[in-house]
Length: 349
Ligand SMILES: [Mn+2]
Image (cartoon, rainbow, N blue to C red; front, side, top):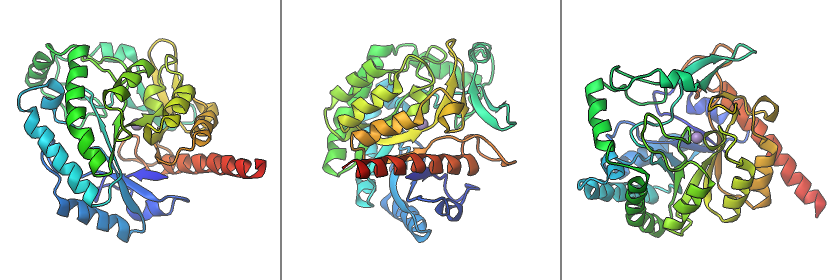
């Protein structure tokens, strides 16, 4: 069981995280190194020490971001791939086991609001198709929750111009180029690369997204057939549409030993491309958490998991999706289901 922590500036401190029952591992990153630069060994080691001093372990990185030039397949990509490999070696030397990353063009996870009120007056992240359609990326300076930066319209024009040459097949080929260079190095150093699916799993503003569904994940895993080319299986990202059968996907990829890291989160979707995030409880959302955990348990899953986003409850404020309370409740719920599965297994033998 792990928990994402945003470093020394995170109001959710390591001391608080430590007090969540069953919490063992911290998932974090070095946030002040620009994308494409090498993460120095000394910096990683200092972070590890800070986490270990708080009684936790540092074994999962989220994320080691992929430079836009790699996704675009520009000639400069080789330099950035070289740096990426150097970072991987430094992380391995410090004992990191799993590196989460994504291959979404330009924008990270996308929501249209982070303050959608639920019936119980908690606030959550939501995506309404209509609200996204009303944003004109060419006319407005846009910033949506989830994006690290707000984009000026001039910058966006330039980025969209660059991506206008990138269709799905070229994105696949740029991803393959990256994987063929990086995965063998990860394998040698004992790291599992774990791609995070696109969130949401469909094109945004005409930018292609490819890590979206079972067919595409099958294709992804075949590019380099190695456990070091694995998944961060995010139930909420892939599960925000009825098109993906989450339980059967979890069962399949876990049996193949290709899930290194699981993000557990529940969402409530409709059939028109809208969704909002809920508490982890199965009956609050569209996903069956017991069935998901049973699929992991039946297939001998021994990787890392974390409660993904949480709602804002009990008056907490802070980074949307990353408060303490609801994620801690999620961790306890997950641990409770897992303990039940373990004990059932013992008593049935
Ligand atoms: Mn996730």
